[in-house]
Amino acid sequence: MTLDTLSQFIDAIDQIGELHRIPQPVKVHLEITEIADRVSKMPGGGKALLFEKPVLRDGTISQYPVAINLFGSMRRMSLALGVKSLDDIGDRITQLMDLKVPDGFLGKLSLLPRLLEISKFPPRVKGGTPSCQEIVWQGDEIDLDKIPVLHCWPEDGGPYITMTAVISKDPVRGIRNVGMYRVQQLGKKHVAMHWQRHKTGAEHMRQMAERGEKMPVCIVVGSDPASMFSASAPLPPNIDEFLFAGFLRKDPVRLAKAVTNDLEVPADAEFVIEGYIDPSEALVVEGPFGDHTGFYSEADLYPKVHVTAVTMRKNAVYSTTIVGRPPMEDFYLGHATERIFLPLLKLTTPEIVDYHMPAEGGFHNLVFVSIDKKYPGHADKVMHALWGQGLMSLAKVLVVVDKEINVRNPGEAWWVALNNRDPQRDVRFTMGPVDVLDHASRAFTYGSKMGIDATRKWPEEGFTRAWPKVIDMDEATKKAVDAKWASLGLPSFGQP
Image (cartoon, rainbow, N blue to C red; front, top):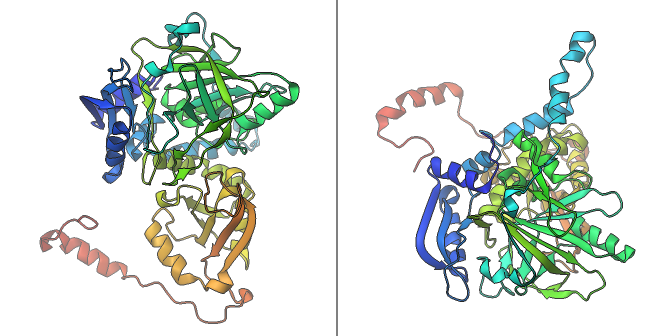
């Protein structure tokens, strides 16, 4: 079943037994974060939470429930995207990319179903009054203080809208971008937009500044889960995130024109904050913010958004997330990205077998990569290829291992990497761009990266000793013990 709204997603989570409702009043100032943080660190990511009586900063109960940790388990992440396994989406992408025209008339006809599937993806504009505009605040009605925006951590610069889909448009080509950028509430009618210099939204603003024009933006909070995820996906600038969401959903995303600007927003969104940025205005202080690295990112200067309207559904639910010391909900969003984009990574680097970004690395700090090594220096080639791939250029540490290593098991990957490397011979250093949030880099957004070649070494790489075999039991003995296991009175293998 296609999930068209946030409420449908919440109901689906409830039906599989992974939703916990909290009827007691809980403060949006710090308390919701503390509860969600504890739950997200439970085995498997804990349950999704629905706070039915969030307490606003003035002490009143908000009329909008707060949903958090919705994507915070493998099962819920798969549910959000309508699959049994996240690898299923990668398989669909692989099939679509393999569009070699076969010989013969019947062979060519066999391509039609896949070509017709592609034609169904683009978003479609819905006529009439969309549900996201059942309630509209304009002028003096605009009051962001009525929305249960979380103040997440004690030293945050203010309340933050975190689970966003920020919509902007390339002023020259008209290509839409939808990005998940954090947004700090500055008052009832203003917010600060934190888009890093590497992001497409920031590039759109630079273009608008050159043209001397104000930049329209829409901040969507809560929509169909595929669109929510797609806002976080590292798509190329010329790929519409709503097109990608349609591919994930196997059904087009329905859009509607915003009330106060020409941008299009999900027709069934819970909240839409419409506004504009004036590039001629001075930037405003945004931050500090407790970030996904587990550390506070420093305050810096970012553009101010003037809110021109707030639209919402009747009985809207406010969806949000928190980031901090891993593991947290963002790990599962990142894991989905990792699984879905593996086929695209293989387009340019086909020797890659698999890759994994463990929670402890905060995505950009550590990437394990397994390769089918074919020649000496192959690991070095892969390192540099990955550092040239979009946001993978920000990876601080790349660890390359052989194809049989399960990189999704960090314990196994580190066991091999720490045994297979000679530190002086197998570690590479290079300079380049790093994440804006990297507080350890020598300069803002610029620093060093490390690559570790943990593959078996070849004679051409200067290794002339015998390479040892991995210890493993023979299959006959394994099967014999499997047959006896139930009678031994021991717990199932792999269980505590």
